[in-house]
Length: 296
Image (cartoon, rainbow, N blue to C red; front, side, top):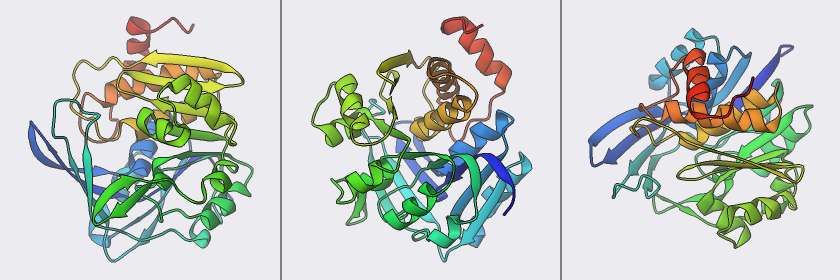
């Protein structure tokens, strides 16, 4: 594969059954899907590497329609998740696994070339240390969502657990995305600023932490923070996937403060609807002008 992409996303397609006070619905998810939708709409050259069942290939076609090059590996079944939100607090959720598309192999990622690579797995085992080491050989900024490694499938329920390869994997990363709960589990502190500093000591040079109200970025000894401003929250699922994608996509051409604001604005608009980000870049710019600091 000779083509150099701006950004590549690696992760399973997930068929998500979302259960909340507003009812039950099925949404096409997966970090690679949320991520590629953002980057493609930003005009970047985007690759997506995924695993899914043949019957769900319409998702691949949707991404191709917006200019994404998709490298899809067929599995007997797609990864299917059930996300239950028991209260009005959308940060409280329980995730069940009903099927899995199986692990990626080093061969499946070997030929991809990109300026940045974002790993977003649903659970541990989809992207193992061997695959991460293959990705780290490339001349790319390597980012990953910590959920890819700390979530395990325990009796068909996703639960966070410490993982034995933590130090090996964190040492390979340039950017780590986590949420406030995961950051506390990684570091033992609920103070996200202290947690971010502790994570950088483990390897990544930049840390992106999402929380209920917004995101925090820590890099080169500096903190950057922005809030989310959705008019209403309909699409909580995929918030973190959208946020790290928007941040990494903008970070290719911008400093951390601008990328942080951009990610907050994109994520705010995404949360107003279920499924991947479908808005225009003009809408993002309009939101930044109305709610965020002037970046001009």
